Image (tube, rainbow, N blue to C red; front, side):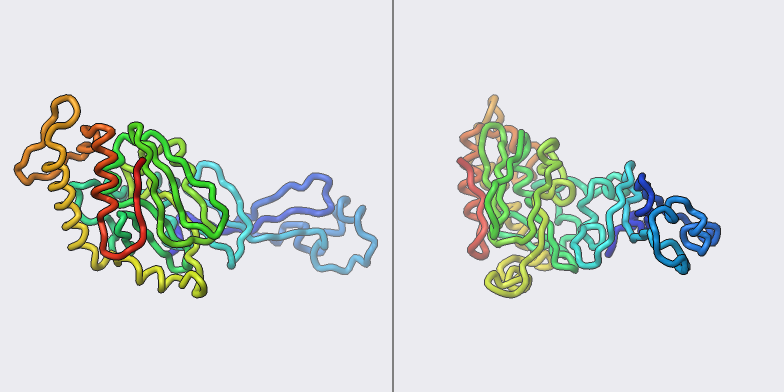
Length: 312
């Protein structure tokens, strides 16, 4: 499903002109345009550059190119259209675009330990280390952390992406109140790029983990040494079957925090009443307790072998 704000238009320019002005064609009648008719021979720029017979129906120096642009962006950037290129604008990945998100009223809610299933959960696949991947129809994908891990990352100060030559597994390091948390997706992703907007707004990871807080985008490799899309899906938990697992993990997290961390920062004490955790529950943990939470809870979350989250 392509982005509703994606637009296509025709861009024209003149190779004979000393100034390469690019003109966006509107919906007006082009019959009055000199370049596209036999009246091009009256153009001094064209006549000064050609020595061939003047028998062309339109100007031989006229260049036309199909371009795309975003109508939701305040500054239109015209990009040459290529059917073979991967673009989030032409698939369901447009939901992770800042411009799309800012232009729609259906804002995806923040998902924390208290929240229910994430929005559009059936489109996602989950790792036991509490990461998710959304594989789009053209095999491109987006990757992020789930709501439980996002809740533990409250107070995130910065994120740094690992610089590893391909082929590689997406990895990043989040600094959370002095604790370095390494996040690694278990499988190789091709043509990978990072969400660099998080370098300026790292809090999006914990506030909007299923939308603007995504970490990586790329292309799932085709069948081969890495197994491809189908192999990757077999190693992960599909969103359509994740409800019971996510609810079990939420209960396990509540029990872990309430029974392991009864005395936390500034005299705060959890209530052993079986209730839900607050949205900002992790902010009450000390650095040592946060390390312990990452290592003992998120590292021990398992349904298949593979991904991990580690703190040091």
